[in-house]
Image 1 (tube, helix red, strand yellow):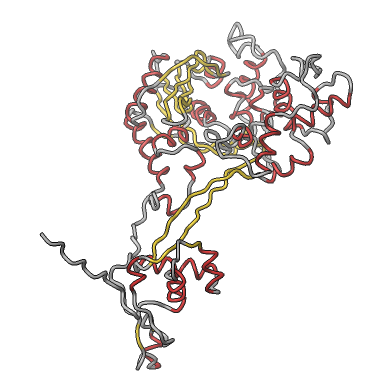
Image 2 (cartoon, rainbow, N blue to C red):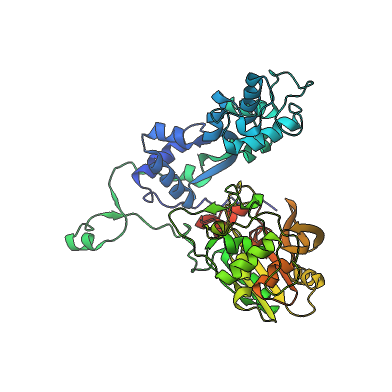
Length: 509
C-alpha cells in the first residue's frame, strides 16, 4: 500500500506573535541554528532577560519553540566557609594555639581569639579522632601525632570547593555541609530552538501593532476601529487553578491526631514560654544536666518567669536533694546530690519538650485514669540538618491508670506504626532522666535508614509523687516531624515547612 502523503503542520497564524516573540523566533530559526541559551538570545535581540524568558515561554505555549533543560548542581562555600579559608578551620586554629603554648592547656584556657566557645568541643573531638591529642584534660599533643603541616581531610575538601573541583557527592563534602561550610547550589540551564511548526510559520513583514485584550478604555475611545487583533491560540495551555487546601504537613498532623483520638486520648495544651521548673525540674532532670545548658535550650531576656506553687516547689526540691517528701519516712532516692537552686527554677525559656505539658496536666489532674496527648512546637539550639531543626513538633503523651506497664507503651507505638503505614518497628532500651525503664522506637526511612521517632518510658516516682500521682504512668515524646518526612516522601525535615506553591502542587515532577 502506498504511503499516505504527510499532513501539513498546523500553524498558529501569521498574526499571532508580538514584536519580541517575532524577533526571538527569527533568531531561533536562523540558518543551521542549533539550540541556544537565553543569555545569548538576549544579546542577539537586544531584549531584556525577563522579556526574553517571558516571550520564549509564550512561544513554547504556541508550539513554536521547544526547550531542552539540564539541571546542574555544584558545591559552593557559604559565608562561614569563605571566612574559614584565611583563618583556618577550627581544628587547625586549636592545633596552632596548642603548639604555640608549648605545654598542656585546659580547654577553657584556649584563647577566645583563636577559638570561640562554641567551636571548642567539636575541634577537640576532631583532633582526637585525627590522633593529634591525648585523651582527657588538660589538652596534650600526642608524641606520635602526624606532622603539624599535614593537611586535614576537611581542609583538602574545602580547598577543592574553593577551586571549583568538588562534586556534590565527592569525598569529604558531607562533613563540610554538616559544619555549615558549604552548600549545594542547583541551577537549571535552558536551551531553546524553533519547533518544526515555528520554522514553517509565515512571518509578518510590517510593523502594524496588534491589539490584545479588549479594555473599557479601548472601547470608549474607539481605538479598536481599523486595528488588527492578535488571534487566540486555542491550543495554548491555560493555568490549572486549584482550590485552597491544607499544607501537606498540616493535613498529615491532623491524620496523626485522629489516630490518637481513636486510641482514646484527648488533647492538652501548654505555653510555649516556659520556666526551668516545668521544662526540667519537675521532670527530675538535674539542674546541671548538659541538655539544660544554653547550648540546647533557648533562654528569653527581659521576661520574668513565674515561680510554681510553693508547696510543689518544696516537694521537687526535696526529691532533687534526696530528702523525704512531707509525711514520708525515707527519701524516694538519693537525688542528684547537689543543692536545688530555687531561683533557677523560675528562669524563663522557650519550651524544649512537650513533656512540660504533661507535667502541668498531672499537677492539675493527678487522679486517674487519664489518657492525654499534646502535639505542639518546641525549640532547641540544634544544628539544622536532615533530621534536626531549631523549631520542631513533638507529640507528648501520657497514659496513667492502675496496671499500666511498659508493654502498654510498646503496644501504643505498634498501633501508631501500623495505623500510619510505617512498616516495621524496632524497639531498644534507652535512658532518660525522668523515665525508668526507658525505650526508643525506630522506623525505617527508605533513604535515610532507621530513624529514632518513639522515645518513651515509665515516669519515675520522683516525677509522679511530688505531683500527687499514685498510679504508674507511661509517657512518650514522639518526633512527628521525622515521621512526617517518611509519610510525605521527603528526605529532610526542613522540607516540611516548604512554602513554594509550585512544589506543593507537584508541578515539575
